Image 1: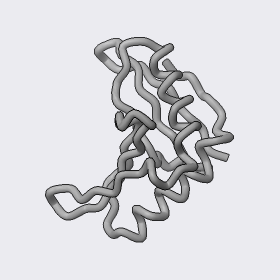
Image 2 (image 1 turned 90 degrees about the vertical axis):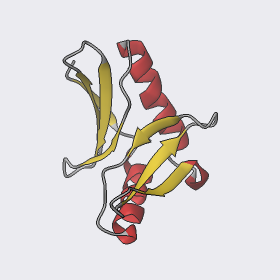
Image 3 (image 1 turned 135 degrees about the vertical axis):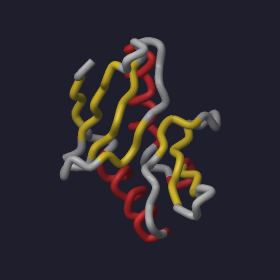
Image 4 (image 1 turned 120 degrees about the vertical axis):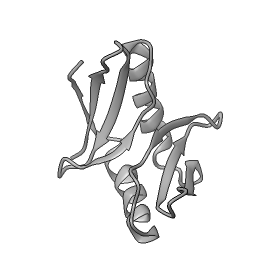
Length: 109
């Protein structure tokens, strides 16, 4: 089972990572000013992760595929790592879909 990890940044803001059951980060958030906003971002990931239309598949300048998960309002709520190929990216999306809904919360802030 996956888990969300909340961390406090050096600047005092908050961010989260969604980790797969093997501990690998599969989605990272932007930074939030408050822990409450960060937790709202996690709730948004849980609500939107199952909808394939919420995934924006992209290619970085160096050619590496990655994806953004967007909320219903179009705002990016999480970004993946860079992948070496599109099949890896699609596996990452499948992992977010599988892990997000029931992921536990680990607050390390």
